[in-house]
Amino acid sequence: MHNSKYLIIGTLLALLSIVGVNMQTYRTGLDKSCMTLQTINPNSASFASLIRLPNVGTTTAQSIIAYRIAHQQIYNGTNAFNTANDLENVKRIGPKTVLQLQQYLKLK
Image (cartoon, rainbow, N blue to C red; front, side, top):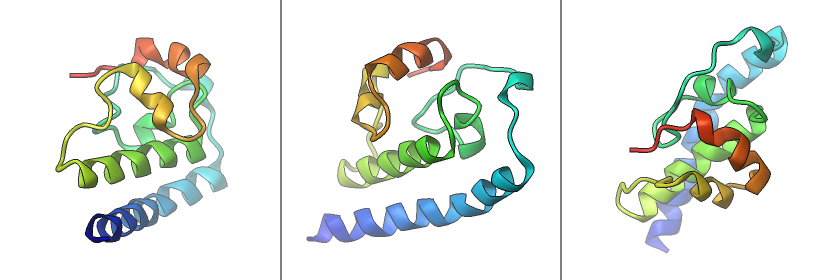
């Protein structure tokens, strides 16, 4: 019960902090074709960095951050993503998406 309380609070805080960026992106539109892609660490990447990845939109980026926060709270701050395949634990991400993202991920 104690962990679930923190899980809910952490997830809500993550989603609330993202709403401003999400709404701004929605209003202005997002053209990924002009963005430079670089490697990112999904354990610490910002919302803005995540949405630059191929096949990662606002909803998937929010899911990554919510999963990361929840995992870190339950497991005392350990990284949620130790391998690229760990991203498959996030809703909306499957094996095909992981294959497309691997070259842009820096884990460790």
